[in-house]
Image (cartoon, rainbow, N blue to C red; front, side):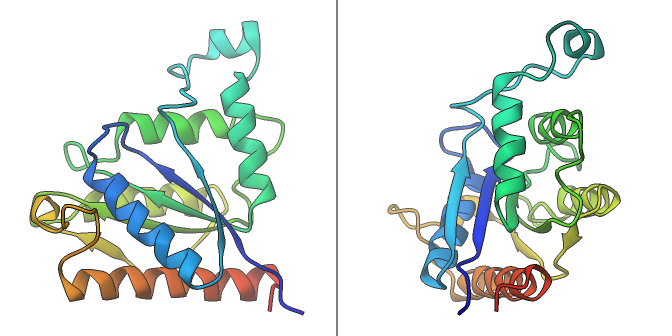
Length: 190
């Protein structure tokens, strides 16, 4: 009997009206429609301090960091919204990844991961996503090759948060299907 894939979703944007959070919400809805169980870790609700080696040495891992590490380990896959600031991932996202690698074991080893990125620009966040793919591959993740970027994202959503454009919807469907297919194969869930 096939097991239900468990996917952990995290957004690298903290803004309430974040375009990346909106795109992540669309991908989460699609994952659930495809039979996945999805947990959302909100970095606004469970913030991390800025990584500092002395802070870690004095106090150890912050409670929210350990909670995220535990969730990474207990899920089969990661779905990360990777916004773009100055052609790079957000400091929030990079800080989150940095803290998570400070525990006893690297929780990313063997994990399956995928990214969504949205931007008002014509690049759609691809530069951030390219960096994050390299980083998570270096940390031991199996990053699915399918990409989901949303250029001109400021015009892409209906008032209810759904995607307007059929091509954008198809991109989300392809990414989530690839994430679940890869997860099932690599995690022995089928």
